[in-house]
Length: 264
Image (cartoon, rainbow, N blue to C red):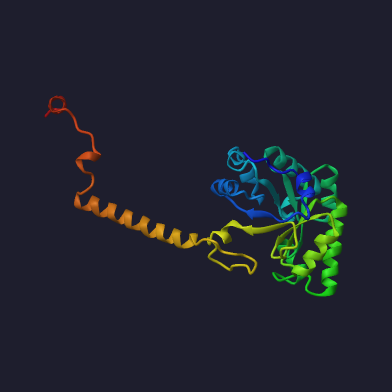
């Protein structure tokens, strides 16, 4: 069994290559990530606190969290963080204010922030589009990452940011940068399992790469499911099911006694 990294381990590895990071949702995916040697994962609260999760993924550094609109007050956030850490999480995602990040970090919560294209804050950066493509915007991103570092966050997700900007920030700050569409100059490369596996039937993000076509396999399995159900229905209608091997019969003497017992 491999050793699960700590925050200290991840910090010590900064500048020594990139980690791999996934967003996944099931125990099967967690077990696959463990077997594949994935380093970091972002998982829903109900998965990371499932008693079976650490059996499936004992070596994956696992972050969980809530977007700030559903997290409540800083005190609510802190209680949630405590529950998650006790339940099996290694770190907590926080898209809330820097004041909230600092509040959590002061209580020794391993906090991960979010910069660039942050879905819950996208209205402030022009919607679902790249962030930091101008010098002014890039400087603002650098300052935001520095403020996260000063607030006590040990990492930030950096999403859909020009590669030059993310690389420059990563080399100038100690905070870990986990890249989703921000290039190879960061400390981890982050993709969704549903994109890697080809399960996403909607818009495929530009930064995503498809390695398998699970959607086609699911379609094939559904066709087989329908065919099997149809054949079953036809067998029942024709009398082909059940066959003698599918039922239990009585000893003839017992059958005769049974019929006599109920009046022939």
